[in-house]
Length: 368
Ligand code: OSB
Ligand code: MG
Image 1 (cartoon, helix red, strand yellow):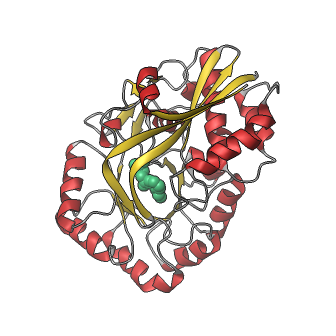
Image 2 (cartoon, rainbow, N blue to C red; image 1 turned 120 degrees about the horizontal axis):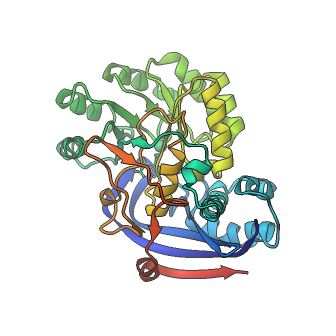
Image 3 (cartoon, rainbow, N blue to C red; image 1 turned 90 degrees about the horizontal axis):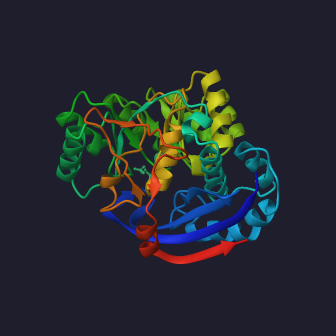
């Protein structure tokens, strides 16, 4: 294979509702879409970086810079046997996994389309129906939070994740558990706490949470290992796992019992599949996280979620929860039993709507 052309375009999309986490509020997304032309076939990828470096060090703008200045020069005019070899060509660039993943996943889409097979098959996926949960941002009031949960449960979603932050943790869990004693519930702190908060984090044990996601500093695996010894709720790591060696360290240190997998955060499918193997070998279940993606990123998340060790409901949910109109056809839809049926078309299996993408585009650079 060979990449003849890479296009990086920025689109702007307004979320239907603001999304608040412990690190900030997102209203409008600035999303980079990456397309590659490989031997006449187009593959699509999405940069999942945020607009600010609040979740990870990468942003939309750093990804654009790294793609143009370092990743494109590393791949142009290079021959490689398969998409699985692309990560090796990018390896000398330290970090910037979301920029790498956009390019790498686009090449995987192109390879699957060249072979006329669904991407999930090329990845050795096995699951044809993906269980779905939702991630609910911090709400203005408990009443609003409860109303949101009610609505998502009615739509069929199989588990509820609520974002927490200092001052909006125990009381929120109390309100949810009083109203919904039996639902599958978890919390995500996005690194808002420290080990000094141990008494509070221990108090969350009484809410029978499926897991507590990334309570401590974003890259501090050791602190999570210390915390996991002191609390009963399983810790799920998100921000801390960027490479296979982080997964190995976290598992061996006992820093987590579950891992949230995100393609962007780990740098693409090659790394995701390596982490999948490590977790599977240690009986650590995975689920697929989300980054408020457009339909392109969502389609990749669905393909990845077909791998056998994705055992828990993910954060990949319907396009209509985020967007008035998504950029793929059909939009991502969720069944009344809270699942996504994995598409059977070649590549990502959802078709990018070129006219709609064109209208949302604010910049567009072609590398040849
Ligand atoms: O921590 O999982 C997270 C969104 C942006 C950044 C980080 C996270 C999230 C979410 C939303 O929880 C997941 C989604 O619905 O896309
Ligand atoms: Mg998270």
